[in-house]
Image (cartoon, helix red, strand yellow):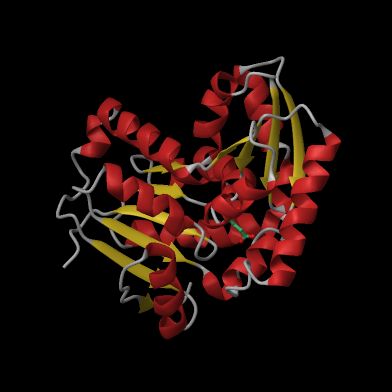
Length: 274
Ligand code: DGL
């Protein structure tokens, strides 16, 4: 049985599992409660108001289930809802609880990875339009040139398990080529959507050898470890039995089948309504 204060990990669907997997590898001692809002995914093309409303519902659910700390393991939710939740909702809802996003960690260190100082972002339409990546990267390295490419077909392809079909590969090639032709000096590409690490090896096979593909999971895991070290008031409250429990707003059997493919282990989730 999962402990009473797991770390909450939220995504619109399956993408956050890539983040959970890296976090759990580095920090296996904690309990985790994963929530996938699969019934309402994808979030990428939804408006700010809707993404905010759905994300807040998910955060409230995870708080009600004992989480003291919730990671929005979704770039779209981090871009469109995190700031409002942190600034407006948390103080009223639960001032001692914390919600963290996934955009800041990679933007803090990307300036150290690029040598040309030209960085590419592949993300959902919502994340691209929010300009969160260029704004955050330029806070830490003001002379870095950031070029973005929205990939609206990728999440539906991944959610449906069709990303490596011949048709799926065509969409991926087209978006990657558009990004690289917009700025041929790009030498680092951030996968700015938590669904995309599942495509990392394929993307590596179609870009020039000097272009590094950066997935967020390992960076987020390290930043979370650092955060917990710096915040003992939160760390002390997190339960530590090494357990994970999964919640989905869609059909449990579908979630278990697809999530097992993502994580490479058998999943037994629980269906909930938000
Ligand atoms: N995996 C999410 C992200 O990182 C959301 C994708 C979606 O639901 O469109 O942006």
